[in-house]
Length: 461
Image 1 (cartoon, rainbow, N blue to C red):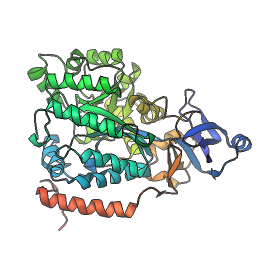
Image 2 (image 1 turned 180 degrees about the vertical axis):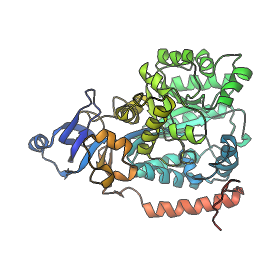
Image 3 (image 1 turned 135 degrees about the vertical axis):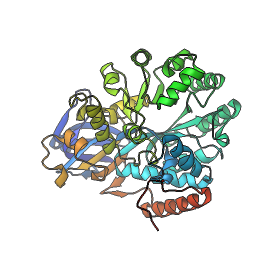
Image 4 (image 1 turned 45 degrees about the vertical axis):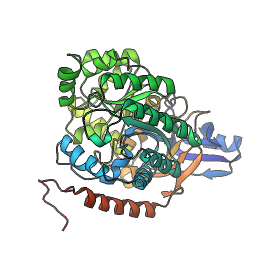
């Protein structure tokens, strides 16, 4: 058993008392945190096989990204001046149709490489590209190689478009079970969860059958919910017989404490109370919602009511990065501006959302999301000795409003140091970047998409 002591000028525990321990240390043995306290006490009590000293560092729980799409990193930067529908069908899905099985592994490696280098240790990937049923297998294999923790969400749909992505209920249930049986619990880092993509893209019978499968598997159920106003109106007028989208979902019996909804931008006060009553969870995607002009989710109200809200970067094609520190800042700024109230959400709120609340949203709050004895050793170390982080009288404020992902110097998952001094140890960074770039070049050529929007004035030639 190797014992690692991780020291810092600050240890931000995000524990129930929200302690920030000055000149602190975290002691790791195998995959668990076995002690936390003042550095001199930890050195006296424990013989560290390795000591990561950090007189200018802050140690904290790794970030938990509760909603993203790994495959989208290969279409980063395309279509940002288009409408959401044009961006989705012309760019993202247009390229995805041309992806080969191997491409998904490189996408997973690229996306998780970016996550590791910006402090994410745990995430939920919504994967719905099932033209090749084995594509999700390569997503999992790429994730396992990098050493990160992940919830692999197998999403499915049986109506709307593109037709190539549609599945009958028998196929959807069979393939979801296969992925669950093969990968759930893999290396102690993979959780497999089913997802119904949206209410528009699944009929009522399909939704009820997938709900039953989710109950059988026991890991919860995910869904994109109330993301766009047009979607909300369409569902109310054409699908739900006048019910709001969340009211309709509740009528179908989906709302419970293991149900995670991505977005929830358009929800009435009545529907928010339904979420609260069911103890359902919300993935807030502030950056994507701003870029797509979707609207502003009522997150401050949800949090006031005690609803668990985590932060998701969403896919790198709609964000356009996977940096949770940026996402925290964008989240805080958006709600301050929208509510004309600088106090409505603060740095501490969004750090909770990005750590312990994200862990709770993924039903892992007892395992990760805070630095507490007995929890998994998923930690990150941030270098505070930077001009943009000086002075540092309020480290949490500096983290949210001044830092960026490149300030993360060490990432630890399951007690293993997978990045140290900005060098990722599990994969070849240069190889991944070169391979992913060549794949995107091929996909652009094969799909025939125009990567420049009509209004782009600066073009590569």
